[in-house]
Amino acid sequence: MNTILIGLGNPLLTDDAIGIKAARKLAEEEWDDIDIEEASVGGMELVEMMLGYDRAIIIDSIVTGKSEVGTIRRITPDDFEESRNVSNLHNVGFKQALRLWSNAGDVIPKEIVIYAVEVDDVFTFSETLTPSVEKALPVVVERIREELTE
Image (tube, rainbow, N blue to C red; front, side):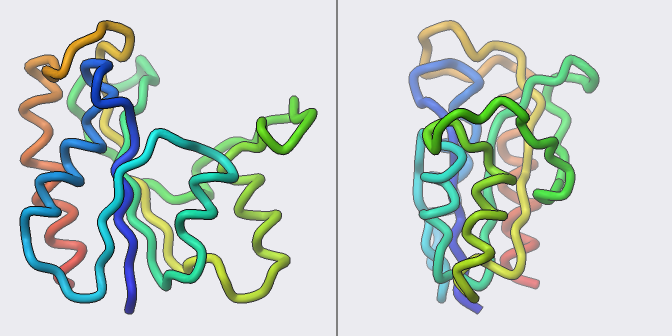
């Protein structure tokens, strides 16, 4: 099964870098049939990165205010709400982009998993994670490593 692992975020915005930092840790290891990428995109561009793969694993920060900072959630696209305010393709949300591409045949991964880490600060310019998110980094890396080796 060919897999793409995508670490999302901005490496210069404190906790928003958690996805990229996790992807970099996993990229230090040897993997068969797994491509590891970093990106600062969403919606249509994110889905286009996954086309042609059997499985996609995405790592990203999330700010809900409903969970303790550092909490890791394993979710799927079914857990996303859709935006009702789309006026052009540049504003297409992730779930809408998946639906649009689903009409193109067998190009979307059959399995898409998102590891979302509840974060604290996504506004301060810094390359350092906050302490609670820093503690979550090796945990999310280990969970993804386990999923990749199953």
